[in-house]
Length: 393
Image 1: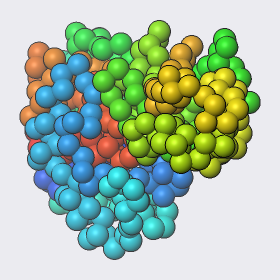
Image 2: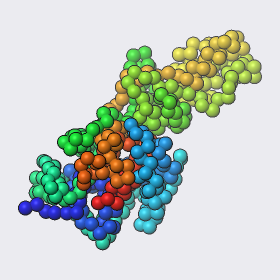
Image 3: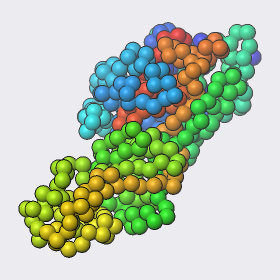
Image 4: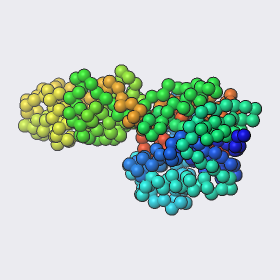
């Protein structure tokens, strides 16, 4: 005999827990089934353990999707300010870092505890069960039956909140996509996002700069981000690179402005003001020495600037402003912060996250083809999409 609930949520991550907490406030009895040993595992490791729980400036422009308009409804109905109000009601101290990123002053555990407290606050009830391996999900005239090694559970509403493929060591899998396809929903090809890029061939020399970081502007296709880049033993990382990685496609170059604050024709001006200076010495003034030396060697501009033709200096300026790297891949899902792609929004209602052709079936969070920038945006999508679905449960 199946245990019955008003709704079953598959996945106890950010989206699933917040959806459950919201449904409880509406007086529903909801079951959360989590595969891992505990809920909120990715919340706990996020933001260096302090959880970058939202971004105060989050809006539709900060998200990638095959349908860039899909996220507008949910994001407008549950905003960063709404989540911040909840954080403050629970007495959690927070601070803003650069670019609108909000973090706990203390521990990410506070966010998980807050969500669990909300789940327990009533007037409804959330039954949260961990270490549940889902063997089967079957529809019937009354809704859905979910079978795990611990029993059979039934509800008229079912929410897919099992995330994407990023960080497999924490239990990530393709379950959401397999279940979506079982019910006839299309899946946009998943790929690692917010992920370090790898270099090979002649660019291997940049790996020798492992540990060196510099503020840059990085570009991939039409996307540009001005933050730090970090050279690693495998290639390129750091916030600027992670951001553009979501827009990068195999075979594309990544352009990096290594001196984003430099004035136009700065080298020609330096030639007039300091004709005895060298390009190497100027680069060492603006960049870490190891990086400056590699760039100077690559540019091949030697001797005093006063003796270098203007044409050669303009070419060096241009290359430093648009240094082209040709990544040969990424570090994959193991190092990806999120998964781009996922359950196609074409089959979902932007108002409720419900599948158009499968009444009672919902998909939220990272499982859906909506991917945010680095900096709290993906958590905001988890909250907003979870809230949207909860209104229809």
